[in-house]
Every structure is written in structure tokens, then in C-alpha cells.
Image 1 (cartoon, helix red, strand yellow):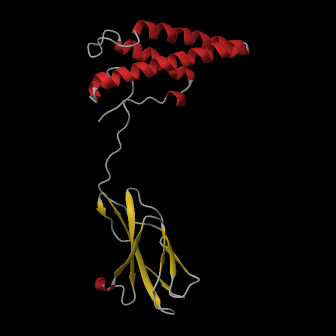
Image 2 (cartoon, helix red, strand yellow; image 1 turned 135 degrees about the vertical axis):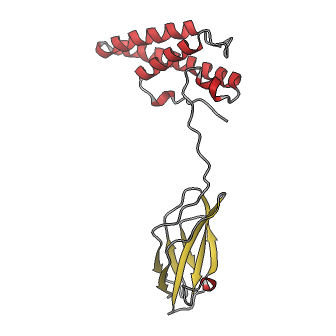
Length: 205
């Protein structure tokens, strides 16, 4: 469902004033919003006051800065109340939301394909029959499957799942000591299973 973006603390005071003026202009006489909680004329007037106080505070005293900051808080509150009203009326309709003057929040696209874990590396563990694995995370992954191979890695049937982890590290255990083993990883998530990483080999302690 569509929504409006309201990051008032992340914008400058001039951007705040511009947003207030735009919202007042777009909602004035807008049939989609017949009864705004903050009258557009009032929001417009307070945005003009803010503009004057911004100019005065640039070369003014600490008192002038305090007056500007107080007006900033007032305009922020007005925009927050207006945004709540817009959301209630629009009910997620992007056309109605955008007609208010507020920017639309970018919707995150669903992940339909999992990437391949990169930078798979290993370290011989201190315990016998163990190898520590590390790899980079994959966006959208809920967990990772760890695969091992003790024979020819070119034969797919030789690969077995050694375990699963939600972290980007895993210690493979119960390996034959003083033997080389192959390792690879793939991501698992809502989009299914991702492709296998490049295989690496290491000797177990």
C-alpha cells in the first residue's frame, strides 16, 4: 500500500518551509481533501512567517534563532497533523496521496532472486575434524546451506548438506582429519534457494 514520506527532521529549515507551502497550495480547494485539519491558508501563513524568521536568524541574535526554531516546531506539528489526515482520507491511493503535495515513500521491490554468497573462505579450526567457514551476506537471505564434499567435487551427487545457519559463518564438524574436503554455500529465503557459491577446499585438523 502506498504511503507518503515524512522525514521532517532530515530536511533543512528552508526545505521544511518549501514543503509546507507546497502542501498548502496543493490542498487548497483539493476535492480529495474537503476538510483538512490544518486549513491551507493557515499553513501558508505560518510558512511565510517561518521564511521571515529564517532570514532574520541568519544575522540575528540567539533570541531570533530561538524564535525561528519555535516556528519550525509549529510548522512540523502542522505538517504531521496534515499528513495523518491525508493518510486517513487517501487509504493508500497513490494518486490521492501525491495530490496532497507530500512526496510518496518509495516502496521496496520484492526480492525475486537471491544472489550468490561471495568471498567464501575457510580456516582450519583448533578442534580435530573441524573447519571454520566465512562468507559475505546475501540480500534477502533468511539462512544459508553449507555443503561439503569428501570425494570428486565435479560429481554433484558427492555434495551433501552439512548444516544450515542464519549467520555468515559456520563451523563444519565431524570431518575426516588430515583429509581435504570441499565446501560451498547457497542462500535460502522467501524467493527460494539461490545458486551455489564457488567451491573451495581445505584440510581438516
